[in-house]
Length: 474
Image (cartoon, rainbow, N blue to C red; front, side):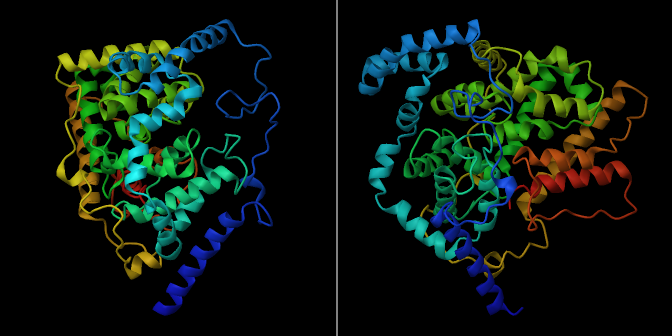
């Protein structure tokens, strides 16, 4: 195809995908896998998530206690939301958020914490403008469509293809891909947009996403921009914490080839959503919106500290990844109040050791261009042509992961003269765990570097792992 034909094909694909969401379910061609079959009656929890087995007919004593406590707090929260700027509210807010925002008030409180009302007023009409630009120019539509189809598939509002909430998620992400063209769209952002949309309307969710990426309190732009510079910095900081407070566990995991990025990537990328039970994930999110990214190192340390006794006996990469990526999401083993209280204590413990925070965002983690300013995409972006080379930022990420791997091997060599067993399954394992961003494989635009046959097995596996990390941003 010549350039003109390629551009026409890309534009036609974008128009086709938008028209599917505009029409909704009526007349849509929907594959069976896109509409999960759940028995809805007796399977939907209070947050709207569907379980593949019937829930207990009666709540247990702990659930009853939680319900009573939440009901008692409703009047206090109603008063606080009406007097949000009062001295009384400011005095009590932190303590009450750490105790948990009642689910009924989550949307209202999140909106207030993110300052969405004022931003929406200042930027009146901007969301519609960005959505119209996305219809004409966005180069991210194919990937957004693929991720919307598989995000929160176990939630009643998202399980049907082209449902109202699926449409809202698609529109929010499409519009944001034009509002912040430096990031465009990165896998993981659909988790944030989907979560906000559970408690907000479409435009509020758009501005909430904007605050999360732009405000230095959260500065998630650095997680999603090319090369993931903030992710790299937070992973390295997590390693420092592990080496100081949990050195025996750190050495064990290093020996098994379990680099921190294998399990902590999604912790930082999406603030522990989809790696913890829903109720705990919401509690962590409540605190994150209050205190910002300072809580991330403390929560990561808390997970490892609470589960150290279960992790230490493990002997393989598979065991570590299965436990930290799958098992904890189903059963965290500790109640939500205990986890949040431990996280608070962890923050103080790390503060005393001067390891509570990796520091404010670095210049290359911050947005370089004004938001909402349109710049016509390049030809290669328009037609979805893959880059032949890694960017400089991606090379930095690759080198950092490789350096951590080499240092772990050196440290382990000092501990023992026994050779480290090559982690021959590492490449395949991470090809599974790369879906920590989405429980599905990336589409045809993702690129996996092929190592030469002369490379030894362990280096080849590590190079595949590092390459996949660089390619989670499509």
